[in-house]
Length: 552
Image: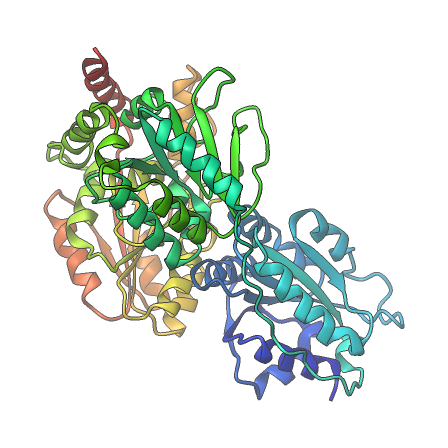
């Protein structure tokens, strides 16, 4: 067999189901090998979108997603999604083609040093220089991709190596369990928690990697009574409807849960990584922090934990629970009553707050509609924009990955591709992509991909004809409105030109009816909805007044 056939066999051996991407001339031998394999090629309309889909596959399954591009421009189009996977800790393999390396076929046409380009943004990158090394490098790539912190790897398969003959066969796939934390570290952490007057639990991104972590966290919360909050990428690892949940750190400061942070004397950070926007800022004379994760903390000006428990997170939490959860602990570790008071204020002013019936909708009103219509098994895929903050803050999640957002690279353009991958993996679940008009248009061509795959998918498109979050920041800095407005197509006609169903909400009462119809009707649906961000500042001011009264 040739090198391309061996590589496809190696991918089958690793359990690969899909390859997302756009093949080119230099991938034709690989494409031919793929044609008769068990792997399904998902042809996308842009390499960036393929990378987002592969990263999402890795994020949701724990197994590396795989995507394919040609050399040159195909490879460079991967850069954003490779970076997305790197910061987000999503295991995936990016495969690119290349001109022959043993002879020169077309001079330097289309050739750039892709391996050097990928080096700073992957965990591993290699050019395959002989067919006999394909099995070794593929096995190593998959092994490295899932090692914590998991992330992207890259292999370049040149055209002549793909056609080179070999008798090598794939290596057996081995599974390596995560190491457990030392007993001394567990005991020291337990002692710190037991001595605390107001301990607080922070659930971050790495807590969402495995279902067993969520189970261990919820058992820890039940047995100890400790109050908790999450980062945006940690949402749902523990049920946010729990009586001990204080919400999500969506705002950088001056929110209700920052009152809790100010009151806490110990914060237990589960799976936190400084690549995610800080949920709070540490000070040298401030709160004591325990870092519990698969990997050591990266020290930073705003994050320098005084104690670390490094090892399998689920195992660490189970052992801590057994150590510090006597019968009386649930009362002691719940704090001095302040967190209970704060919880009531959060329920009243965030989750159950009365909102005026206005149109266009504010993000807060929109969040309320989705909360009422989406069941616990639904999935929201959020692109990047002002609305993401309010969904992170006001939308409660019951399950791991029921809200998919990116608070590490925080890139625009991922919302629709991520929703497509999620629907492919969970066809029985209702999936809604929520996109601003700016982010949607970056990868809107993937509507065709969703339709070709015959997916049932709803896109809620929030239109404000500009870059809303940046305009809000611009105004907050006292700068004049400049450079952030643009025009848009007729989104209803645009969706229908692909074969999707298009809708336009024109009043307060219509959205819920249209959205419910879309969620229960097969096919791809796009709902255009005007959005009003003008309330952001006034809402925050009002909530800060409530906070001040609470602290008073």
